[in-house]
Length: 463
Image (cartoon, rainbow, N blue to C red; front, side, top):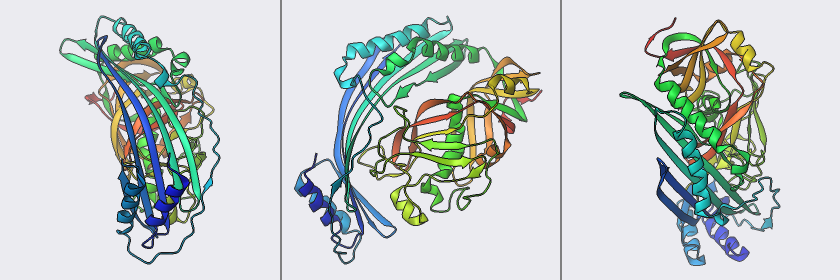
């Protein structure tokens, strides 16, 4: 990518006005996206993103610049202009680069760039056929295939020099069911940090039929009852509630500035003793995994909550300075156009001792949230609002009629305390997470859990 001499010169230029840390992030990314609607390919786009970001620290101040002109002259100009925003005297810091050897735990067997568009479209056709043929009420099926091949190079004034490659593949399936004037949709989006071999490991037809089943079930369902009552949240993408309502509040992006409900609470009980939660960017081939983060720190397993006690945060370099703590391998960014900050990778509530069937059998009345949809959260307060995309009523220890239109409303800290049963069926779901450093791939997950009481928004009073 860049010669060692150019890297050294650019870092020196970045430190020329008194900065005490400088960093270069270079990427070369190839991506492909194919869109299909009702069995016909509407769009097939391939692109390349190439450029360099330069970041400088001066104490707790930071400045960031980027360019897609990677010539020495352009990089030196960008470094000097960024440095000018942090006036001071040169610190005379010596930069001696040493290449970091990185363990590669996300192997790729079938590189997407070596797979033809015809083969990719064939997978999409399988998904379309399975969903469209599931039921006569399926009125529309949209499929999106995506692959990304990103090579990165990171160097900094502490002497780090490292490179990495990230290859991700994903299929998005959206099925729409219609009944008269009513429409309901269901989405599934399996993805992994791997190549085209993803489609040897998942059953595309089964996943597509599952999406269609959800859409058909919900279009025929009555509205959910409103009120305060127990909610059973199923595994896999049910973990989006922890991700949004609690995970963002454990990122140093908010913790270091004191605008998180969990700031300053290390060692305190913040959840039920049944809850242990982890962020782990080192899980082989998981959607949110990386060998190194976007500052060059090796990713690792970080225990956030252990038996209800707050044990740690997710921390990047700049916020590590603010907090007096070490980076945790959670610095991430969408591309070279964004400065990195602390972000989640693969975040989940760990498996418990109960079974899903035991939880249901031991519940007299509850909403069973089989699938979660979108929502919003305020990290400072933990207040959230989430839609249940597929729900059912549990009555007398049995799953009964389906219900739609349910919304879960509450605070992350309160929900953590209210969890009174945790199953052993841990599973994860894939999504894209947006924050100040852009949109990044992240896994969410949990086993089936029961929350003693949540405010449920619906269309009628609870029974």
